[in-house]
Image 1 (cartoon, rainbow, N blue to C red):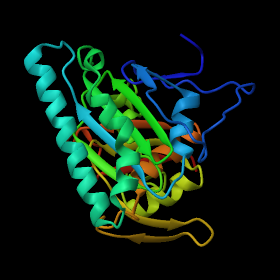
Image 2: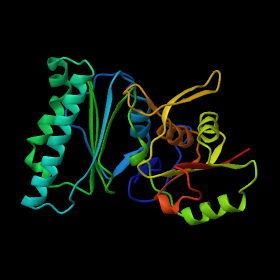
Image 3: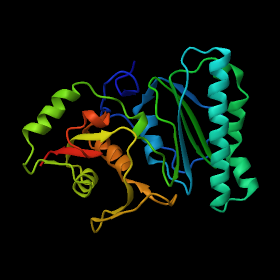
Image 4: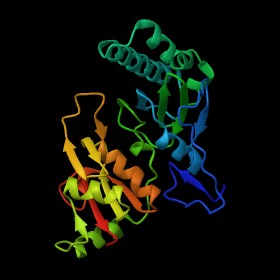
Length: 266
């Protein structure tokens, strides 16, 4: 295993060496089946995190690791229904039938791949635009969700770090100081400016809105519009990019009753 890999199962985040050159597919045309299993390289994580398009579709689905005919049918039906719902949402958002068909073609091709569905793992992540398609078999079972933003939703494929109890204890020890916060506005702003050493995120949570870096203006929304940004997800990406630690926790494991919290560097 290389020195610059992020693993979806093994709880380690490795930083790239100075010689690593990160090349992301910023609106580059990439189509067809590109299956990744278990390990997400740093380059691929950053490629996905930095990709931008008018509609970046992200799909997370739980699947069955040990395939049998019944499990395969369940997984196929869940994926098929997800694509149907996605098609309806795209149509409601003003996409014409031809554009929808072209965008979803690689995903529908995947439905026909019997070999793929006979060798699934615990989860599936799909990253899809009009010109881009990535499929990742996950070693963890994600909550089923589908989003369409101007970038991909990366939080569910963020590695799980060891020693979360130690980090939570560290947060508790610094509670009521200026080095901790569970206020979304404070944490999101700090993430954009590289101030976070430890970020705690509730699994499955979202914080919708927009953040303007030039003015530090934060606007929170209800997430009903596909143009809304998932600021919690963006905080995860910014923290990892700035070499901070990210902890994805169940609600009852969070250091405070908030979907997001952080320990600041300064």
